[in-house]
Image 1 (cartoon, helix red, strand yellow):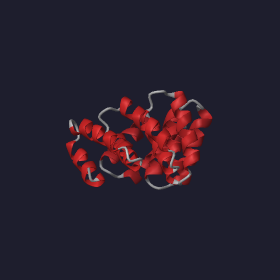
Image 2 (spheres, rainbow, N blue to C red; image 1 turned 60 degrees about the vertical axis):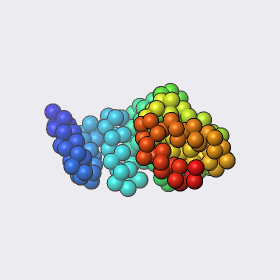
Image 3 (cartoon, helix red, strand yellow; image 1 turned 90 degrees about the vertical axis):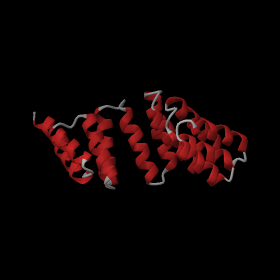
Image 4 (spheres, rainbow, N blue to C red; image 1 turned 135 degrees about the vertical axis):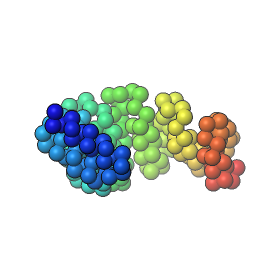
Length: 181
């Protein structure tokens, strides 16, 4: 019962934009109930509050309890990405994908790390998969369009811009402006 009240309180403070207070409440929750999902949630708050060491410790603890918890793997991927350890991030994202084939955020995260490593064809494949899994999420379209532009594939850029125009016209206009298309 104590954990339920703390979770409600943490959700309340998160909704108010008080991430630090919510994160502190999650730390109290995992002290009482160190379940893998709670550890991952607490780690996410640490990450969002720039406590990267705390986040890593909590994500690794979650994986110790449940080595098949794909959420902890993709969160570790984002953590390593923030630390600019893109090859390591790719490994974590890949593990998340192997455990959950439809994890769009892991495909997207892996694509961003591939872009940082200038592995454009791999990034394109992951961004396309992200779009299949999340067809109305503009971020994958945005990065895919910029990647095509780097590769001088302007026809592909225009196809994407025309697709995104139907549900995110402001992003379509922004891309045209940024890429001079």
